[in-house]
Amino acid sequence: MKKLVSGMIAAGVLALNPVAGHAALGDETLKPETTDSDVQDLQDLLKDKGYFTYHKTTTYYGSYTTSAVKKLQKEEGLKVDGIAGNSVYKALGVFSKQAIVDEAKKYTGTPYEWGGETPDGFDCSGYLNYIFDRAANIDLPRVVKDIHKEGTSVDSPQAGDIVFFDINGNGELSHAGVYVGDGKFMHASSSKGVTTSELDSSYWSSRYEGAKRYR
Image 1: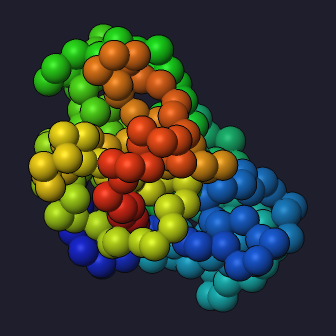
Image 2 (image 1 turned 30 degrees about the vertical axis):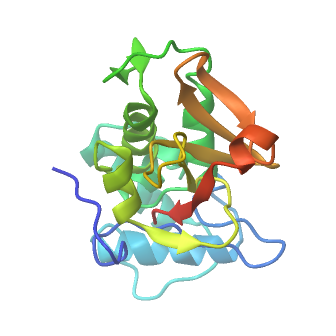
């Protein structure tokens, strides 16, 4: 079973942060004949898994990289086309913030169901469990208070981070959602089902208890 542990690199699950003006590995599809620093990062990961056997890594996506990607795709039962997209990154233990956001948006309008953890119906933590598992191979704890015990606290949430709330005002965390950018988060609301809300609205900002990053 997949485990969420501190030190995701040691667990083989990576999310590489971009430098200014440059996307993180996993946020963009890499194709043969591409020249980019991300190609070298991809080669390093393929080399660690035993797929890339050329004696040195480069920034060029040539025949050696294409062959390595095809070998991985074949072994993982993926479409064998030599292109490094989301499925290849996931097989390598790499996930992108955008993958989590994209997965979260797929279930907009899904009805709320207490204890629900499938697209037939979600509660708030069931929703987070489902999208993080599918997008990033991360197995979150099942309830909000335990999810909050994991991860790394951040001052300002970024897309893919989890935001937490004390709905009842009793000092206990009782609700959570995934931040999707532009001041918005997605969550399974008991009244609206899976929906998007504004973090700085009067209701949510007064109940906000911080954010954590799971990567």
